[in-house]
Image (cartoon, rainbow, N blue to C red; front, side):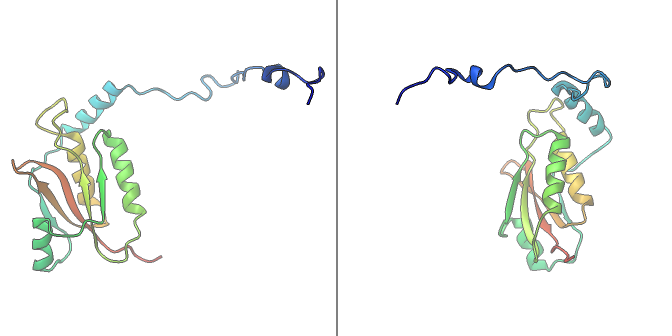
Length: 171
């Protein structure tokens, strides 16, 4: 097999001259998105947090549950169908992912999810975790949640919640 002289030797010679894409002159900053710095995002979520309070021990039931089911849920003796871990998420990202998961669920019977929000030891304000407060607040008002219980560790601190989801309605 011989190599003929009429074929290009390199990829650049094969594809020819390349011109860069020029930005539109009619719209200033076309195609650019504003950059949000991490520090400003953290400050913003702490400002929103200033008006909210929470309790470390939560046990709320929004539907009628049998005493057996409620006791099993409070003691953690239920089968957990899904675990969502939000360590390292910003508040806005975590709420978006949580809301998407709640909307897209396909359960035909009540199911249990464990939602890990963390204890908030790495936050600027060591006493209040913004992620914890906003996730619990979002779960309290969401229509898919029928019960909510905080999961306590051996020191009595909560880094996760156990939720019972209502069956998905047929459309």
